[in-house]
Image 1 (cartoon, rainbow, N blue to C red):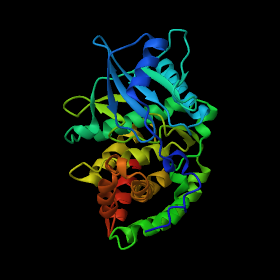
Image 2: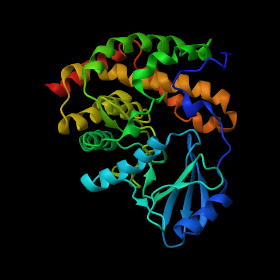
Image 3: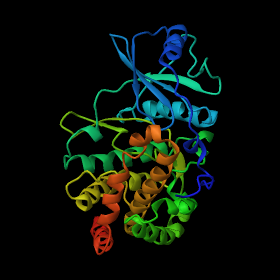
Length: 345
């Protein structure tokens, strides 16, 4: 096993385990500062402690941040919801619920290092919990394009956070390779490092903007039949980076499709129809998607050893990432490149 003291330089809150916020403390703060009360249900999360609040008349999501989350990053997550609601209300996102005194954020009384906020609870099913529907791939691509256009005008210092889940930080994950010792996927992960290097010149020349950076099946809500998007949540991984990285991340979470490659092509086509991509970008996408898969495998294998009590949640995308990376082996990578290039024809 790798030495757990050898951590990526941007591991940050991902490497620090904290005691979750208690339902009792949260309920007391909700009553005092929001005049809200009801049944609290713990909702899984990677860093924050999340509760669903059901008052009997309405439902809300209550978030208590990780104590090492920066104030700027948290404030950006609040500001981006207001930006989207103002400039592109057609994108279904949560709405902030202000305190009685009008404040947006509260210093969590039980631990002032943490902040607490309340947002509306969106109707819809987690995409993770609905059967695959072919129509969802182009819908995700189209939503990613709309989101990119909307976030292009969003400016906030909290988007400058250094985050391990940034595709541009792939090199920093090299110390985690020993966690894959004797693992059959190790060779594919190592090969991805090489292909990623070829993408660096393109990434460096593309303009940066705010991006969601985590369009995964637990952050996309859909209709009960799984065909239409009903909501987009959780901007906790938001950074400034080229918009194509958001599309690559979205495509990396289409591994539940019966045929992954056509689903990726459909998603990219949905994006390209609204926000045209250059041929170099289309050619780079398979390697950027593979980078997300490789990062997911490395980061989750490492973090599951640090936080075994949360391992099932941490590893939830590990197996799917292995499936995706295996799909690109052999001729799969070149075939996907050629299929995506047809979008530019």
